Length: 203
Image (cartoon, rainbow, N blue to C red):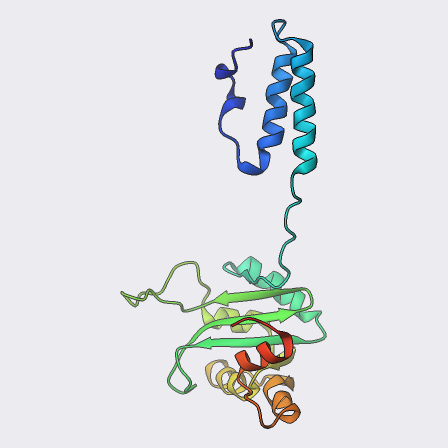
């Protein structure tokens, strides 16, 4: 038999490449005169059956946020948002008071994708700012939020934070919290409650 142990092809492959890797091993056997043809045929048929039975890769979740960590990625997102007819925004902050707290991150969503830009996340035990984050001033400048038609849940919160932290006079075209209150004035209007009730989204 061929000396497969001497081939780089016998290195353990990533799981998704097992069938292709095995097929390469069978190709090596084709050059081995000591390997019976019926053995090669049997192995190849088994590989065909294996590939046919393999489940297809799960599609990418379109709602999974893309984490934006570089200026280049930020500019790409800004270009995408500039073309969107409406953009959902959600600010992560260190507290509720826009006069005392800091912006930690900003979530953005439109039909083309969902994005999260971390700006001031800190290590829980040391309080040090974590690496690979963009400065808030850079993010708020480059996103041009003042030009976008924005949607938020309790837009007053985002409005005050953006105005105080960056001097941005944001333009909100819809507030889902107010809409939820108008639809069901007797029911909770917190974001988690509305998402669970209206969209069947888990906590």
